[in-house]
Length: 324
Ligand code: TXA
Ligand code: MG
Image (cartoon, rainbow, N blue to C red; front, side, top):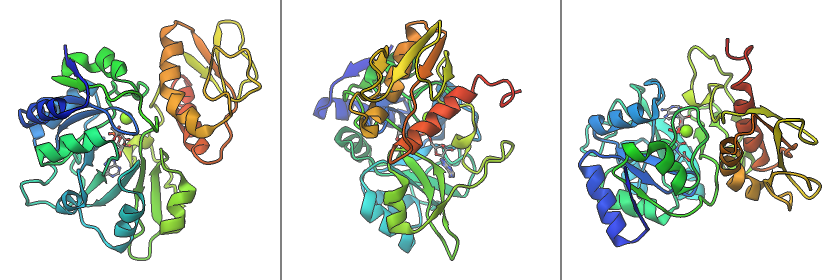
């Protein structure tokens, strides 16, 4: 079972040492907790896939401590530089051409054999301190078993992946609560692609890099494997845009009018607050044993678009037509 540590120099040194030894660490970031491994070490990365029971074709994000480390593992052209300057550190992942040949190069397994690499500079100070202390990029998918909601509290990581980790750092609840937005920046006359909605909203990105297209998902050959439908699923059956609970359902509310909710994502009706609570509340209602969860309508503005995306994936996980 993992040791639990609180942010500080001792925890940072212990985490870097565990990563250097090829072990896994539960690492807080501003989006969700990550299951961290040394991204240059294929044996360590293999442990991540095994612990998450994650299909091998799904590549991992390489987390860096600064721009110099990012440029050592990926090629930044002008649009990528502009995006990094505007939004890093923060909840944005850039899919870029991969650079190999250095001792900091991300291993093939972490990139699932692609010639691109997903790079992110997190804003959480502990995450950055650990990566800087290791001196190498850190591969960190969300620290949940594949298909389960992402962890936004240290205890979620301990409960689900405690046995797989040498250490879990408890950085408190994640400030953003949704995974990073994943984009492939525009290149050579082609529009950029919005590969995964997430903690940075589309409007802010498009103001810097122009319109982003959402590539259609071919379930047999997903361009970004995180787009496959069965994802982020609690055990309970989800019913969306509900006005109230039916028999056997818990009600997950949003806004002031939802007075009879078991839990309310944001009584103020604030989508940013709702994003921060989403995964923790789904988990809480799930573990309370409700067979169904009715979820109030969430507006589509700002982070609401990403919340709707996560909810519809979670709801469709139980749909026999979407998943024969
Ligand atoms: O907020 C986050 O991004 C969290 C925290 C821990 O940083 N990490 C996270 O990682 O959500 P993960 O592995 O669960 O999601 C990575 C996403 C997946 O949808 C994957 O398919 C996509 O990024 N991805 C990774 N490399 C890619 C690549 N080369 N091309 C296209 N998509 C890629
Ligand atoms: Mg994930």
